[in-house]
Image (cartoon, rainbow, N blue to C red; front, top):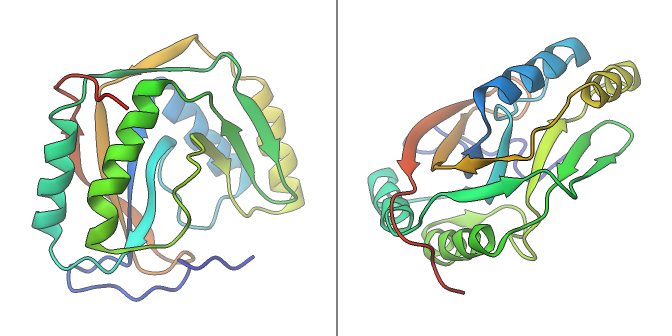
Length: 194
């Protein structure tokens, strides 16, 4: 399956595309990484996370963009992300956990989309916002079955307090490239109003 961001060329900063994500707790991230490994994940994938602002590219200033992100996150308080009501969705080669969206997460998404989108070109539609965690992406049928089995064994906590947003950037193409964490931005302010 081909995606619009698969073969974007690296830019002047040596990255082909970017995304803003909330990292999940380390213990869950480790479990998700093991699922990826056992299922044979080959496509470059950001370590387990909740997407806040989807893939974009074509920025003119990496420092300028990071300043814009910092100006948003410095005004936002940590957000509780719950797993109650989350729904798993499987396709023939991928799996996602769709999460309920608390108003504070929606407000953070809206603010980042409003401020960051004008700085580059958005690859996928940001709205309506679908908070999700990619379990596995573009694996074989055998890999998908492995991922389903392993994912069903995870006992989720009630949720977690998200206290930062990470700027992720991919160097190279979707197949053969790699995602890197460029900067972590603490959520250190007050909740944005909608």
